[in-house]
Length: 348
Image (cartoon, rainbow, N blue to C red):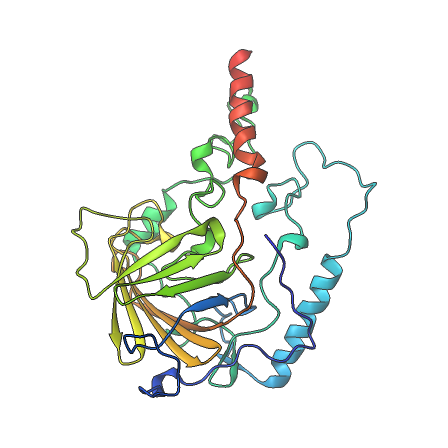
């Protein structure tokens, strides 16, 4: 997990244009078969969240964006100061740090690389990736989906103390987050990038936001930095039968003028993008805006999960950075310790 923070004095690197007005021209680089060349490595790290708060506008003024970006930069600077070497160990039972910190302070700002700028589209900074619905919010879940997600994988406690629950039946019987290795998310198990970084849809996450596109007449490959997930898009091909399902779905592509359109179905029931079912349907559109920028647009539909389809878009800026080996298991103590704890308990 390398950091790629850029000095704030660097000019705005998210340069975009109106993809809807793009027409087939000879001014852009093309592959030997005549299609727009989308190849390259892109760093999609951004401060722009997927959704925006209720009542917020889609776009920011330059002054508003500069103020918010400076606040984030100042906060990151303070959070990035070296930790005290003589600090005490975390207290028994954890220090209360949430999420990926694992209740023991496992993550700090050193690991975070979520960008320094808001996404710019059509020359305006965006406050959300979602553009439809117009309020920038994911549509409500269907009653069926609400019931399904409420009963799936319920974990209410961040810590695990199975022995204590055996000694005191009155304690919360809900399984703890670390009671079973299968309860850990796919990203922690080094099986799939977390937060839908692998796609589809491909969304920005806290770190490892590089994507590399390799393009041939028959295939387009999207290689992701996290876990090295590689999505292979088969061009001008039919979907596999519904009996063949993949974690990142079955992606087939076609050209709509100078825009690459990727249609993905045939998901499994293991990935569950934001509670979706295996019937999730994602349509992505990749459009070259200029020599160093792609506009990525996606539409998501799952009638069993959301009351209506929803759409998002953001820019993919090119980078000179390279994708390096992603080390996951090498520093992954969580799963090993879960298994070691179980084996130790068996010896008692």
